Image (cartoon, rainbow, N blue to C red; front, side, top):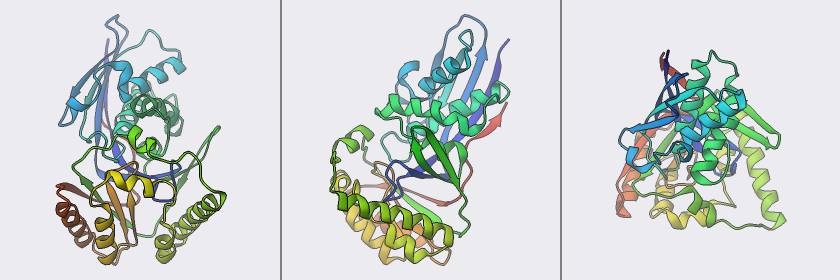
Length: 313
């Protein structure tokens, strides 16, 4: 006898400029869909890919972020006799900086948890989805999978032990995301980073991170903007994103609070206050990328958006 659950998990913005690997938030309106069918037959685990970006992700169960996440969760729960068929509708582009691998992983473990009668809290699914990230990009980071599962804005205080802090932000901020049509692999974006930094640089980055959180929680948009200054990753990663500097310049000129690289890029995000029209910021950024020879997609989302959810079961 088989059972089926379908779940959605959203795209995400990670890092938020100065919060490298420790901050992220969910986006509204884009994400992957996973349908899980479980049975106790001997059919074995398999993955079926569909959707616009299906040709760009691994079809092997163990090499796909959704499959690897499911395998980790099944092993943890001791359900070795359970056989899973994953149908992954891949709606997010690979290497986009939108948490593509995280979305598939998050939707998969969320669907499995629902299918099994929710033996685990949603927050406890994060480590399994992180294993999907390890397979996809070589690093088990949580700043995409955590907001994709939990929704809203999250802070990862520690990885060992894992300590994820949902942050409630009620200041009406919204986000403009531009995805220029080039691919930046997470592994490549990490490879260009320096391996060590002067203590003074780390101190300044830490101060920006603390100030950013303070500004978000207090609604001090001026402080948020002053704090969105990445001294670690952005200076190295901009070389991978033609048109980035101009896009950031026009976003700020159009009234954005701050602007930076989403995750490892090439997507670029801009935070906007309720008084600033995201509909004016976004097209200006797109024009900047067109001037650099790149077409792009535009997404506008509230800062606090829902996480993974069941579509049907």
